[in-house]
Length: 119
Image (cartoon, rainbow, N blue to C red; front, side, top):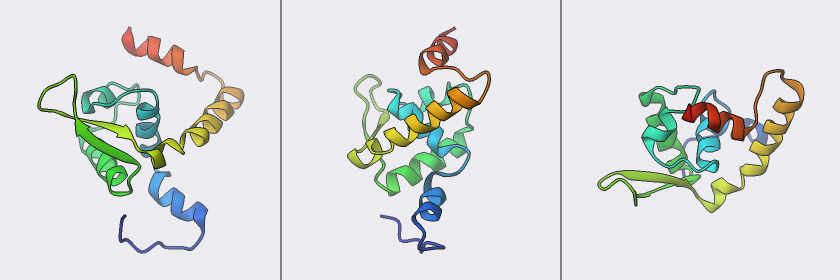
C-alpha cells in the first residue's frame, strides 16, 4: 500500500485523492469492460496520453486496485485486470454511469460506446 500520508482523515477526500482525477476512473471503467492491454486503453474515445496512462496504471497497481499479469494473447506483453478490491468499485461506476445517462444529454450506453470504438 502507498505510504503517502493522507491530507485528511475524510474517506471522501482520500478516495478522491486516489480515483478523483480526470483519468483514473476511465481506466477502471475500461478494465471493468474487459480491456486489459495498454494499447486497448489508448483506443478509448477519451484518448489518454501514454505517460498519463502509465502513471495511472502504476498508481492503481500500488494501491492494489489493479494487478499485472503476463498477457495470454500477446506474448512478451503485460496485461492488467481489476483485483478483488478493484472490482468493488464497479457499483460506484454503475451509479456514475446511471446518473450520466439520466442527466447528461448525449451520453451513450457502454454497448453504443463499444460500437463507436469498433467503427
